[in-house]
Image 1: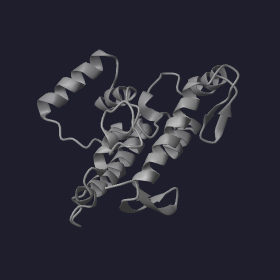
Image 2: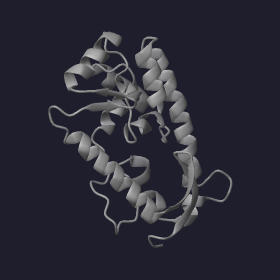
Image 3: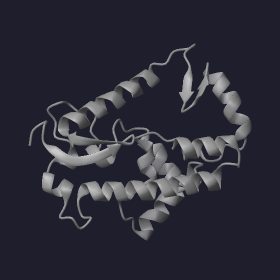
Length: 196
């Protein structure tokens, strides 16, 4: 397997592209650059939240606070990494679920998904694709692409690609339900659902 090995056609942003190691690496580097720009934002630079722009943190807080004065729904603001908290790919035993629920409640979080969302803040890349690595290099083989046969599967929905797409669909439905249950009806909830 090399950088030109094709993993099939995928639709991204409404356009079909041929997914290769090189294109995936470029996408990760672009996301990493965007993340870095967000982290390096200094005073006086805008905060852009989808189609809304704010000249400072204070202006963003003034917009957000009155719309969610009780502070519910902290996991409503997702990105490419934290969105996977809603698309859990693992089966959890009842005992583990109860233990996670107890820990989440003890820390002031309402749901397990909020605890999982908070945990994603330590990840640099989407875990389902690369695992919990600190850095992805051009010469690295990304976890989900180590085996082309495993990626493509046998046509029975058993490939990594199909499982990720299925998990993402479930995650989108869970995310929308979470927002509907935790954010008050209005412009903030509408905007969050649309941007997620």
